[in-house]
Image (cartoon, rainbow, N blue to C red; front, side):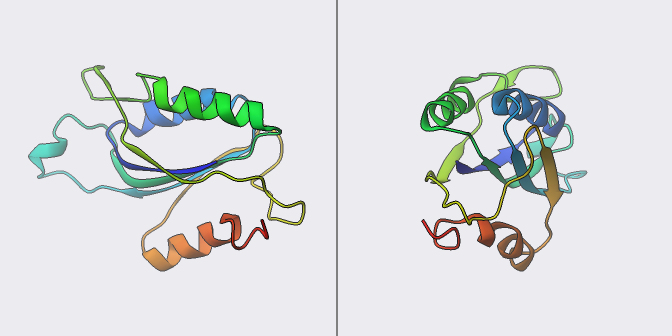
Length: 136
């Protein structure tokens, strides 16, 4: 599954919840850091990110359904600095069965995050995982 989260207020809480949702399945996420020192909108944010793309590879359809259910229903995926839960606004980019020759998300249990700065950086990171590139 590949999905995008527009804004993450508490990146530490988000990564903790994302790792729990992945349940040991390979997971990678790409994010942009928000510089918000003078931004009142993010005054309650803790290390906020924007445009976070998450990719998780599950062994079967049942595990993929459970993973996405957890992502959508977990009220603690994101929290503000006061510890108040916030619902994430996510957009599912693609859900598909990867072809055997597609690029691997990672080894069993791997969990990695990479910051990107430009759209070209993101394209380089994401393109190998998209359905068109994965020969689905």
